[in-house]
Length: 484
Image (cartoon, rainbow, N blue to C red; front, top):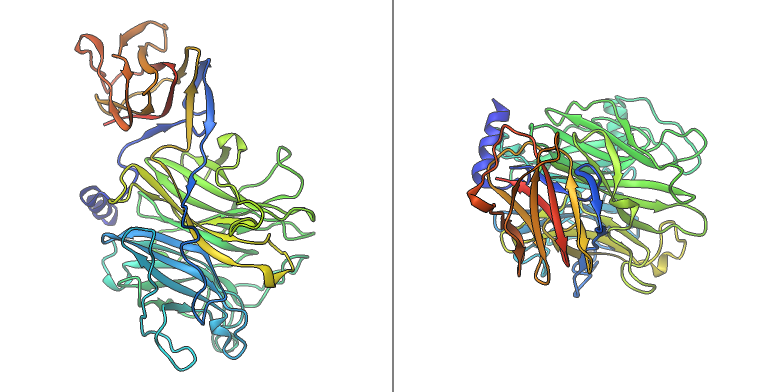
């Protein structure tokens, strides 16, 4: 019943990105053969006013998009990580969660929420404090429209550690972890959850973690089946803290599956490569992961973003030709040392339907850089064309890309393409015989994210037959195609 309610709400409120399947070119899944075309991994455009959010409050020493941004009730809402290591009196304020909001995604305000008192004043934007025993990390937030208990409409998943008082009173439900070089296990540490009716006033669930491991740095999605899925940094190595990607899921947000490893660096990666975390978005029935790459060799320590993809949210593969999707800035810039993206991308917000918004935290220095007085952590924005992660490009010479067999789920075919200086024309092919069944009219003099394809002689697709599609191209770029 909960699943039916969930589907009803996402359909009528149009808040999801998985209404129909889009066929992208971020990996090779949809490609049977090509001739004269090349794949380009397109970088998002960093906003010229970056950084958009800086540490400008007394309780902020640094801010990071180790958190979430959603488009909710006609505004952008952000829950972000606050570093305040200079706080020595009350350690709960050393690592906190701040809240900010914006009508345009560019100009942000930090409202005074009157929730927590800091140094004699409740005029601050703090929405969650750590227990004070360790670091509170990566507050990942989702809005759950299918939740019947309105006090739990918003859900947060984050890393923390039980206080000494709670440990004595309630005990640790999990065995303490094992120390290895690079990781000091603490009694009572793990992932915690909290609930809120409005995203402002939060109630922590109990005093104990819902699960633990040698992990932190999490992201969170509410998937199309109503389940909650978390992705996080985990280490299974016995000789050191070697960061790979872990996964756990839950149907009620309280009982989580045993953490499992889902993706690891391999021999194709540079020496020292680790995965610090991964943000995941269910993008039109494609699970797209933005891996927080960490180049952990002594002479490096940079962090940037690469792609991973999955068809089922659990089995992942590297994508985007392992090229950098979101690079760090140049030396001396606000994001020169590291880039960490928010828990999910914002796809097609109402104010900018043809774009994807990617909020990310940047650092002036590299991870583990000891020059802390030169480190600034701030938050910025990068945007990219809808479906624009990768394009198949034909230039001066004619070329084509032919797909694997596909059964359309609708009779209408659309493409996202740039063909203002060339053309795209589609042959519909019988994948068994190679016979061309139908031809489309040429798409030209156009640059749009949604282009309806019309076929010669009023021919129409059917939803009961497999086809291969051959995109004949010249001086054009193809980002995606789909049926609706």
